[in-house]
Length: 64
Image 1 (cartoon, rainbow, N blue to C red):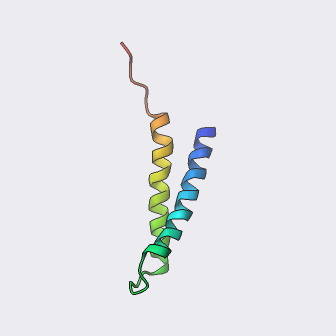
Image 2 (cartoon, helix red, strand yellow):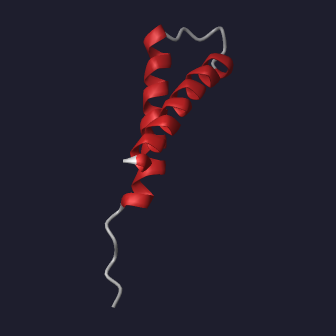
Image 3 (cartoon, rainbow, N blue to C red):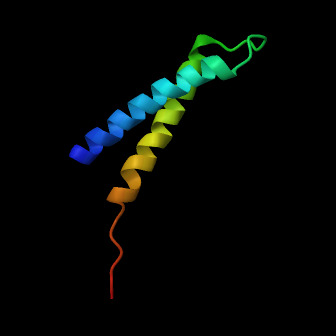
């Protein structure tokens, strides 16, 4: 349970950071709707969650 909490916390921070990065990186000339920033944050949060949670909780390989 604690690993999931850490993964969710990391994903939340990554989502916030990626939305902030998109604000800085996307040029003012580009018309990006408000939900574009939300989508960027959600995608990045999902990828971060998987990067944090998946490797530690993958099925164990049988050692023979």
